[in-house]
Length: 473
Image 1 (spheres, rainbow, N blue to C red):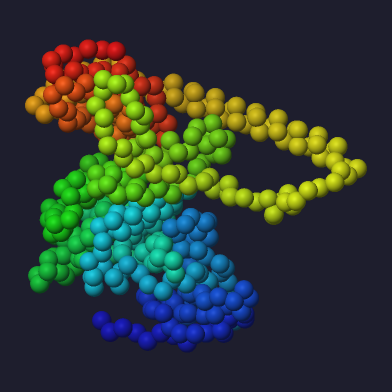
Image 2 (image 1 turned 90 degrees about the horizontal axis):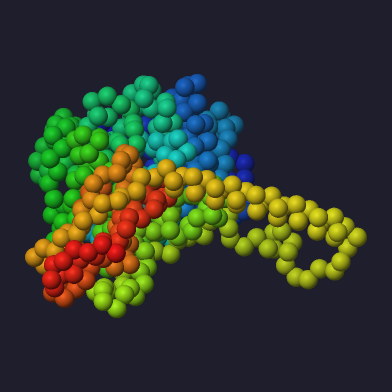
């Protein structure tokens, strides 16, 4: 199919046309210079010949969705949307000079960069999901790079709300990164299919090709769809990619949606676990806190941490190499606003200061009440989380295996195991094996985490490897 020529750029008040950036099936993207404030921007313009009421509504939905989500650091920022004098709707967006779609086939991307990009883009997807929005076209070419090298997710053009996705008509899709159930028109998009696309995208960035593409083979639509349907994923072919990461990607692209990570957040935690395994600084999770009062009552760092900073432990326990734990970003909107609020510098007393003091006092009381309500919600939520009560420990050749019975996990729940005061990454398996040497005393406890909160920990179980005697503490 021949590529069409871009349409004539529209005359937009306050903007000066610079060049053409690209063309798609329904729109062209141009580089403009905005007069005030002066900056380069990308302007996406709907084609005049395809403008219909339905397409106009889709375009407006994209503008609204991206504006709703673009405060996220890994989602492309939208500045404004309007209709040009010639009747074509347009969208003014942050200008990004490159996309990963241009890089990953040309050069081998560093493993650390790919893991970081994966965490950041999955954070953007998780944020969208929490607001009821599916992207439905996650792929390398839709990951742009800002002037400061930060990856951002773009093009929500075929996005749909989670509820609409189950019943919406067929939409455009990108076969190499689409889940089998989407290719079979069983669904137009779900959280599970987005997890597949996230895994396929990370795989592509590592391998330099899409997951089921055969170098030098038949990579037409039919052949690709047949391979995707079988879901027999080949390794990335890179010697620096650990087996654990290959397993994370294989799980995300399982044929059965229920076998994949339950959501984008679980996929993020799996990538962070690989970063920790490789000794890399963990990329922080960028997911907005749902309720500020709840965030005040619960340490935000604990909500986003995969591996906690552990203490020195008892003298009789093993000494483990400290692992890097991510420092959580500040709460959204928690950056300093002193100047904006007129609070910088000293103030003299004014006649209205007493009324102001009363107002501040009332606000303070309200804040205390809200924080108390949040704390109560946390306590009540924690009480509903099941508790592990039967941790058993057995010394094995070169290690210790701890196991327990399922206390009633729900789909998105996970176990958080603490071994010798070190919190390990969340897991779904009801057992874990840790390395230990002769003379070591290894202690572990288990808690269940649900919706970012952890329940009560089990009683600590300790195993003395030297005599292989199990004793509860």
